[in-house]
Image (cartoon, rainbow, N blue to C red; front, side):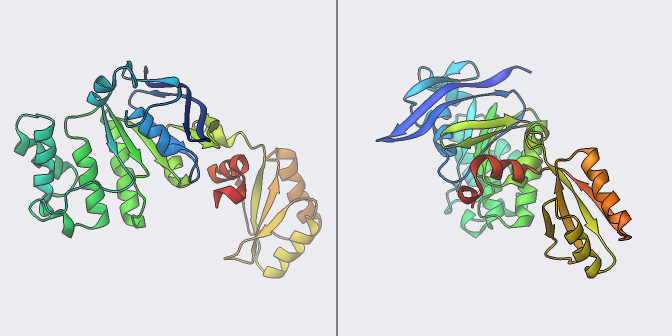
Length: 310
């Protein structure tokens, strides 16, 4: 696939504070790209530059082959931006909001386009209700529907599930997946690790103004050589005895089940076999065991530091 977004050595400062320090990445057409970082990492600043709302101090970025600084109008023709908070007119109905955007973009058949979006985003029953009566999830769906009027090639979703309950968050994830399946390139910024892991084809971690790691979710997990095993016993006393015997490894107890312990190893077969041998020699029976691999959260916290991530 061709690259639809290319960013090279992007820099941006606000007074004496440098927010972006030579940020570079590329995004394939039709993919879901997640820019992951803690608060203040520079995610929104990067999105503002790429969406032509702000100019960089240095570096270069092209979208659909157009330079974001020299050709902002052409860039805006192929992108759409949905911010952290739904930008809908609460006085208007859902249908009226969509028709307004269609008119501003000089799209033909505004009513037909609006009705198509209402159906696609499951808002038909609320089409003639004021947006002020919508739930948070409905507003967010309407906001994205408005962003997609005119079929932009790229949509920027800046923290799209902020403030949504778990049910609406999952519904939003499915919607994002569907967008990509239909050919739209999705640029996602998020603080939610599970969101990035579930959605993204490619992830870049932004920390202190720099991209510190990038790749597929599986690629990023291989950055940590450690793995481990989760062991469950028939009795709590056996779990405690096992923890004492396995003192050469970091061991933690499951907070919800005192009969279960997590043993951290380097992930190799030899250490896994050693753990089982120690317990077998001590006649401690394991009722269940599961090998564990590093999670995206492990990678993220290791890279940016646990204190900053909280």
